[in-house]
Amino acid sequence: MSRFSEPPDPAFDEINRSLDVDRRLWPYDVRQSRAHVRMLAAREIIPAADADAILAALDTVHAELAGDRFPFEESDEDIHMAIERRVTELAGPAGARMHTGRSRNDQVATDLVLYTREAAAETVLRIEGLMGALLEAAREGTGVTLPGYTHLQRAQPVFLAHHLLAYFWMLGRDRERFRFVEAQCSVLPLGAGALAGVNFDTNRRMVAEELGFEAVAPNSLDAVSNRDFVLDYISAAATCATHLSRLGAELVLWSSQEFGFVELPDAWTSGSSLMPQKKNPDAAELLRAKAPRVAGDLASLHGVIHALPLAYNKDLQEDKEYLFDAADTLALSLAAAQGMIEGATFDAERMAEAAADEMIAATDLADLLVTRGVPFREAHAAIAGLVRVATDSGRTLSELSDEELLAQSEHLDGQARELLRRESWTASKVSEGGTSPDRVAEQLEAAARLLG
Ligand code: ARG
Image 1 (cartoon, rainbow, N blue to C red):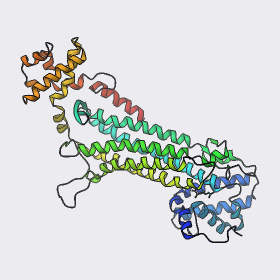
Image 2: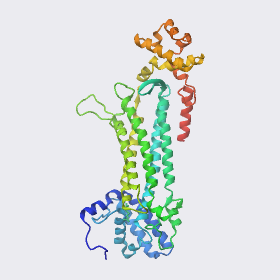
Image 3: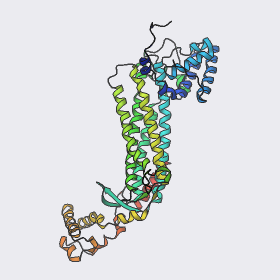
């Protein structure tokens, strides 16, 4: 018997069904059903023979889904209903006992937390893959200098290793965020029932243990309506994707003829259908463009959850599209970033040439005056004057005469000329975390230790 006298409107069916999105939750759904049924039998809530029949049917369902030959039907609304229908077909009347003491509300929350826990663990591995590639490229780039930029204007020279390691540390923080997500996925929702708990003396801890949870959710209402772990995953993903967009943007700039700092591997670039000379950094451009999409997933899910009354509401069905999209987008972006860094050829000469721009030593000259007792603001003005004289006359700083130097400050003597030698610019950045060779070597060691 059904409570309804009319069949669903086709459009209702379309808006209501989620099978196309949630079918990928099947491994978690089968896993939780096994644990649930074993517990029901252990507590004598269902007969042991029925549990055996259900478990055998679940094995078949598992094989069918893994082999892509599961007989889905038009009427299957979501993956949970499809699996239950099939188990009942295979196990006969025993199958109808599988859903005892369970609601789709605690069931879907459990599938989702299992999925998110695995996705977070996989993301950690992917991040580590990229961190390893950056560390390797940094090791190879220890002696190579390039201009560091602010406002995309040449600012001060840095080592390539130093520049690449900046991304390494960003990704290290991302890794921490995904470890936090994993920790947020250690509480079992199953056993909450629809919202209030169930009318059977279940053993939630037994289920938690089988499924690898550390605890059971202490409040059934919270258990079925909690999607914080999804927000946490997408939030971490949005930050990580934003980091990758910055890396992508730099690879686009650096691989342009104007910069010429890097050549990207053929495997991660494309040609032009019209212009035979082109090698386009498509994947790096897409790292830029994919990031806002993940941020959009986060904003959308906040929109879905905000102001929802307790406990389960069908709105929550929409959580999966954003979660899967964020996880898939980030996985691809991380793979692309790793592939590009592993195959990148950095042009040390082009970089060194750009970093040889003497104007880049202006701060060092100002700091020399500071060591001679000149207040920094006055020193800054004196060197700005010097830069102006050089620029106005189309000369470099070292082409200025001793008189021209001394005219700006009595302290601009022979030692100032020494400072215009390139090696001194990086060697002098001795503060912790700075770009002097010793500090960069120290940083490389710390990075290797962090990656373990
Ligand atoms: N497909 C649903 C979802 O993803 C499963 C839960 C349905 N629960 C319900 N009470 N209708 O949220």
